[in-house]
Amino acid sequence: ADLDVYLDEHNLPNEHDYFDPTKVEESRECGLHTQL
Image 1: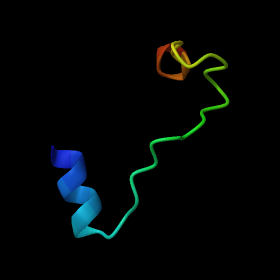
Image 2: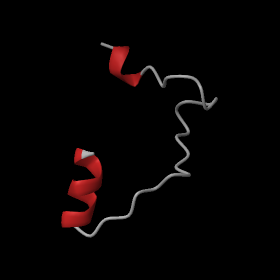
Image 3: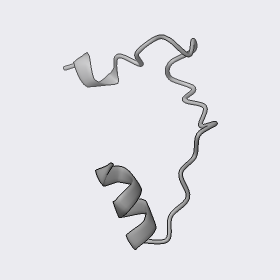
């Protein structure tokens, strides 16, 4: 995918176990993009 190519080109890791503290639950959206 495009993300994998970008990461490879810029020598960046792909963090599969990233924890987003704004989501609380793994299946939940953070809601930050819906706030105005």
